[in-house]
Image (cartoon, one colour):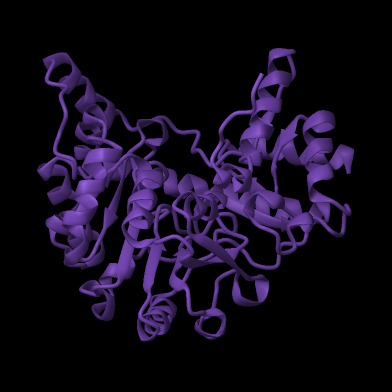
Length: 391
């Protein structure tokens, strides 16, 4: 049997370790074990009923055909109104591109801007797929080591020092995965001044927008200096705050000069986003749905407030408290030498699944676990007791 004719880039694409961990969890569950899932970034709430009903009406009518490649005009307009009503941001609907999940948005942004050998600067730790998507388009992901001292976010000085002759842009996330930390509007503007002065791009991942605690949700697009910037891309998603993970729908806000080129890419990559998902998303911005979503945000805040002190009492070191998303990035070094080995021990001996830091980069990865509070409070407390017995 001859060797497969794989592209060289595939050798650089690492597995998504959290999915490997989930597979093991499913194996144990098939054996009758009870596993408490704190590994996958997926809310445990169902999609809000008004959105489900909107999709059902479309399916019942039978008109489930392709939409325009950039998405339903009515949905692009609804997203623009949401920016205006919730954040006071003026975003033209023509700049909003509805995509096959936030991953589709990232693919389109990178495909439109990245030539072979171009570098993107990314914080480490950070969302793992970002660096692999850069590699997928023949770019180079350059890691910026961040830690609790900067709330796991890159600083303008750090970006300026790291910028090189092949640097094309900087990718940041607020709230971030895996740390749940935020960038202020002033910090985003400072980062934008650096990338702009270098002739580069800034891509802001806001897919956890709406899931913030003790601070109001925000967008880079509400900053006057950024609202009409011709070098700023903003990625968002219906998965996290809106509870539509399996529907695979997101959006991308682009400068006007990029719309036509990204439209061509979208036509070939995806044809169009999912039609039922888009009609469901039209109901996302109604008062009834938003009331449901805000109640869920309050529940996530309560879960965070349960889990943070409990993990600290167990001995985990959590130097920076999350203000968004639904993750706690915990330093395990007071308890174990290797976070990956600890994650394996917890799932095998305690039936608790958490994600080792190696999924999110290299900087201090062996010292950290990402623990998601995407399950109800009593299960979180049970997980803590199970971990206590093992530790």
